[in-house]
Length: 200
Image 1 (cartoon, rainbow, N blue to C red):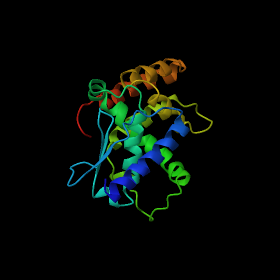
Image 2: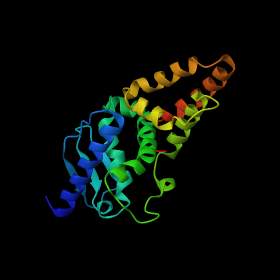
Image 3: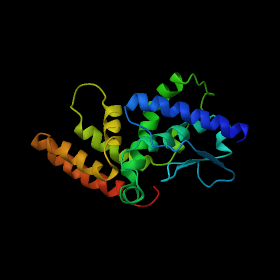
């Protein structure tokens, strides 16, 4: 194992320890990481529970969102190939938005300081999935009160991927009638996006 791979392994170990503390979920990561030269991806969490990272990315500050994203996949309940392919947005959207929400706290807990502007969330994938999920979350939130974004996404991560649409739908059924009608319309449109088996 070379120095960069050893550092990446240590960073993932630290990230996963913090994420387990923050979410209360156990990781199923195998403990193995592979740096892939010339990769056509930033990161991948294999269904074997290994993590692969683009070797060039691993050298830059921009690696942190990808490391956190892939680490969150290891905490995701029901992370199996068939369900992932059928409900891709219900996994990638949940994980990516949670990465964005938890990243500042994860980096503080790990004493990581990065260059200003190192992270460009607008350039990261899965924005269309996040937009669909955020529409549903806003419909479910009370008109007044705190922002329950982190809790919403952690709760979804705790449910098997295939059950997440039903969890959100059941919450929508609890809304008052007028809001429920609007929610159902939004759910139909959002779920069509979140179950689309193509890259956004």
